[in-house]
Length: 482
Ligand SMILES: Cc1cc2nc3c(=O)[nH]c(=O)nc-3n(C[C@H](O)[C@H](O)[C@H](O)COP(=O)(O)OP(=O)(O)OC[C@H]3O[C@@H](n4cnc5c(N)ncnc54)[C@H](O)[C@@H]3O)c2cc1C
Image (tube, rainbow, N blue to C red):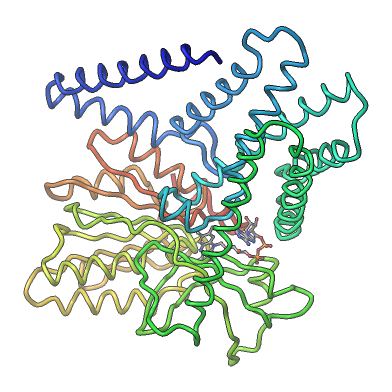
């Protein structure tokens, strides 16, 4: 692009931003609140696509961003192109620019999490879509060049690697063998970086710089990861890890068993509870790593490698009422939140006046997962002699006998859970602002989103970093909430 055009575009963008900011300041407060409410309910809380297994939710805002990103790439590749050779050249240039963030990795990491403060769901979505666009640009670049001149060995290998990365990332393949996908994806991505170095050797300096930045990002990310891993692995650490509610860690059990390749698997688990130096996680049984954990003899000690913590600590203390909604294993993400809120309420360091947990159990057996911790939360709340007690607990258990304890704050119910009524009821129970934090399977989460959006009140909705997938039990329980 001509230098003058770049200057004109940058100048125009700055003027537009300034203009919008001036208009915003001129609008009166109630209109501003209405606009913010509209943006939250229609763009942030509404989804264009609900997550499937191993994919991410796409909110309307995220969808628009992706659309914009795609349109910018298509425009940059095709606007005023004189011939196919120019398209190939542009696709190659855009490929090498877009590839830079991909080498930070698909899994969350220190740079994405702490510096860019991206939630895992947002980061994974970004990684996937940038990757898809790179694959298309790489293919167009490769095939158009191959059509005009004979492809060298390096170019053929590059093209095959791009095809392999694209094919292996298909949702159905990812789902089928997630762990195999992760490892092959990493291997092909590394091979691609090496072969790209040979490819760009004789082309522009810009390509070498971009590839240099991508390689440096990969290296830096891994050096940070290794340092943190060594520092935080239980037994090797001198200071306790600083952990907060809503954060998660990656766990590796090197001696799990040979055929499950414990050493090269790391799995994320949200921190459910902390007892002194002990970090407690709740594990739901799946088919791979978690299944191998359940197969271990009950009284065994295994050394573990811990990577993290990752994820933002959501500060819910500035709300008057906090409603936590969970289905199944989602309760793991809420326990520490409640404990922190209750303790902070005791210290009078937060605004919260009411903390309510509604736990939807997909099967009656799930009740045992968190009972010990819920009991401790009730103890923390009842020892609050200075202020009033604020913790309200409701469990929705299939086939349970309706139960209301003498203390009206605790109940068990087998009835259908109307999430919209639950949310509206909690928000209206007394004055002040309300936050809803949800951790449940996609179907449950969607019902909560609907409830918040349909409420006339201004309710702030938050998601946890852990977005559970829908298990068979979760699917069977769909009819018990709406
Ligand atoms: C931030 C976060 C926090 C989580 N917290 C908890 C928790 O507290 N309790 C709990 O039971 N589960 C939690 N999970 C889910 C848990 O990580 C997976 O269920 C677990 O990795 C499954 O391992 P598996 O080999 O037994 O599963 P599989 O049966 O092989 O796969 C089941 C699903 O688990 C996911 N998965 C598998 N391997 C990985 C991996 N290495 N990284 C990310 N996802 C993977 C995939 O989506 C896959 O579809 C959390 C997930 C995330 C992302």
